[in-house]
Length: 119
Image (cartoon, rainbow, N blue to C red):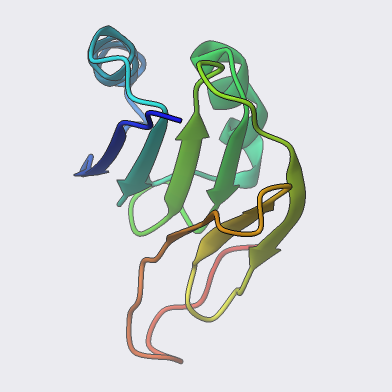
């Protein structure tokens, strides 16, 4: 299996044009897995962004103007997500797969208690 993995601080992708540019750039590089930090996603934007990406995603949302991480998967490898984990105090996103040697984490850590996710 040949995986290309990227990690990118996107410094907020709430703007439609900027998000499309980031997604198009990531697709053009043919990354299998993209881990995003500072996505600035919310519960309301998660499904829209997943639809725009076009493949599987996991987001740990916080607010439209701070924090938030995500993992974007492309369909150029076999992936079955068995378990996803989100901790509201630390904003990680993780995925366990059907291959026990693969698991993915994207972390956005701040001091516990300093910032609380918006619910």
